Length: 266
Image (cartoon, rainbow, N blue to C red):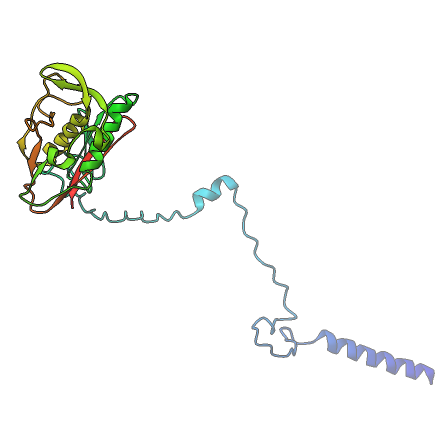
């Protein structure tokens, strides 16, 4: 009995083994569909291997690359700039009245006189010895007397009439004067330097000079032809006419060795 059972078991084993070895080639595994085409791979076929890219020497890699020539960047168009404004000599309103040229705001100084080109028609300065106290006193009084004087269009300015008497009663002291070609001392010595400085400003401002006199001796603070000697006896005076169509005002000061006079539109 045992012998028959063993023979039957061996027969079944042979049948099972023969069935497994005779399975149809190319049979595919029943895998769930994941949407990937690689899911239904041939399980019985030979395993596929990835083709390896042949190594290329490094020295040949650059030559094997495709060179792409990029177009050159175009230059930005040149936009023409507006031409520079021409320079103007002299300040507006001052040219012609002062006869001086220069950049606006600058002072043109020539031979001891200055001509502001902004706010004034003309400005003049002269120097004196500040250690001479009597002369400095007389200059300060005379400059204060003409300071703020307004001359209307067509009106005549008289220096003597404006400063008045230069006597001791009005605060003047004795200082050097020129009389008949000689030096002497008298009250009011130095007032001629104020009139001379005013004369320089009036000439530069384009005023019409009606009366002007040279000193009987040379002076060091003004050029010949720009000085204005005066005297209290009425023989010598300095006068000018305002030829502008508007009033003008005189600003004068005398201190610390400098006499300054300016003429501007009132």
